[in-house]
Amino acid sequence: MVAMTELGVIGAPQINATTELQIWNNIWRGEGPSESPIAYVANFFIGNGRNTQLYEDQARIADIMAFNPMMAGPYGQHRDELLSTGMTGQVSPLLPGHFANNARILLVVIIADTGLTHYLLARQEEGEIWVMNPDGGNDTQQPDLFAWANGPAGGKAKTGGTYYIFTGIFVHVT
Image (cartoon, rainbow, N blue to C red; front, side, top):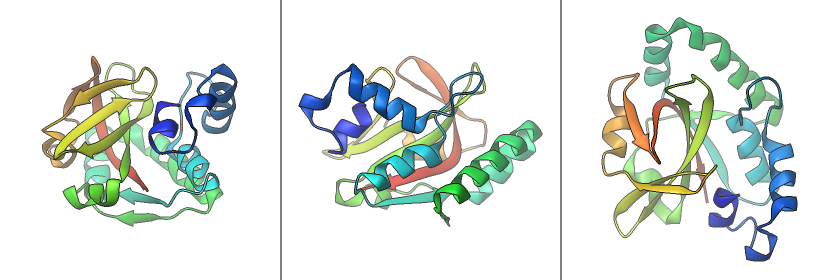
């Protein structure tokens, strides 16, 4: 809900349990351990009038799969979910220019301790990069975002007290 508010999809009067449940029902897979597939999240933004573009750093994705072949299954599921929304990905690593025009970036990450996928909300404010875990609204200044996102596959970064691995998949929203 924090990400939806920050992007202007919902306003302050709508920040309540009813709205949270409505959003949750639209973006969570709902099987086994809860995960929020990025295709569902991006589709929610599209349905609410936001310009949304998926990006994939193919080299990073290949490195992660080489590092951990078990990721091939989740990546295949990710691709199937994207196809179901009609969205296609552009090939690009995360670059500073992606933050132009007050854009928000949804980073698809792996929670290092559990292996579950999740997303983080990144933004640039007064030249500084901030990354937020939408689940709790924990906001962390992340000056090394590009070094982490474009560094070695499997590299971890701490945001809001949790370590994450960037998958090379992100969504640009304006």
